[in-house]
Length: 200
Image (cartoon, rainbow, N blue to C red; front, top):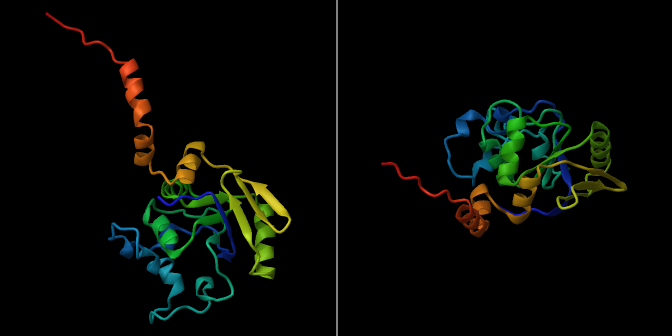
């Protein structure tokens, strides 16, 4: 998993509530078991017209906005639990999704893969969106160590699971974490071994 500690980037506003995982990556693209290349079909049915030409009205097809941070609306990632939704977002180039709330399963999938689900209060979200719309070059800084997000003169604290935070900072999957504490596990097992009881 790719490490993440701090990111300063511009942002892309996709200001739609209840964006579900079938819009993030339609079900017909779920056959792949690899994480690369899947970003080509991110928001496929919104990004492309029926004739497969890019939809000029969709924000990801516009040159006005760019960056590694996607701003969604309320209840981002609702719907089915497909992990491919996170893969597609990351393969496209996003490292952070900012929203006022996330679907629980999407949030967990994001944390498991190193995508930061940045949940902020509605007032901060609105202020950030306004700044981006007024000036698409506005830079947003997300600091995972301090758990802060900043732009212009505004800042906010965000919550994140402590274990997942440490894994993302180090670039660890669950298995990587277990390998990293293998000596501690071995020592614990040795100290808590229960003698076998014989029966006659």
